[in-house]
Image 1 (tube, rainbow, N blue to C red):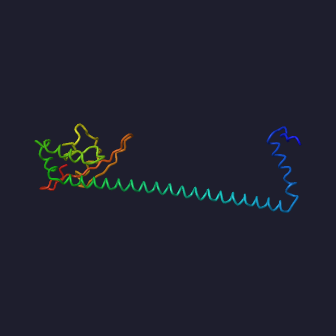
Image 2: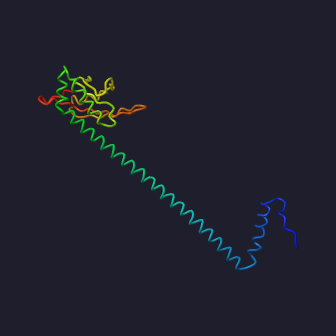
Length: 195
């Protein structure tokens, strides 16, 4: 019975070095070993090529899927925002042409009794609307659906008083940007812009 082999001093690196030194002797002894080594090398090369190609294609497919998903979500958010703003603009246009609103500008006595509850009802029914205010022809707030809330009005927000066209202004703010919409209020009998 022979004694078990002991690992040479130097450990694993020495074993690897010895195996690499013995490989040419093993490889050169027979044609079948050379064919087997060539086939193994070919299989490894094909495997590496297919693995790399598969990785590149899979990565591209995943990236395309992510981009497509993000584009779909962005388009859906854009459509929701457009629909919401379109609905809001339509409602504000109807409100601006409402005879109750135009008469309230002319009625300086007692309008608070009916105008403010009316504006609050309109304001409460709209999600995302911060304030709803009615301004007179000089740009002063006549009534607001939110008491004590007065936005600083940029000068271009008063343009509907002279142009008779609605205006939208994006007010950037560091913590809470706002989209301001202004519609001309036309007094029915005279067709003049009153607010």
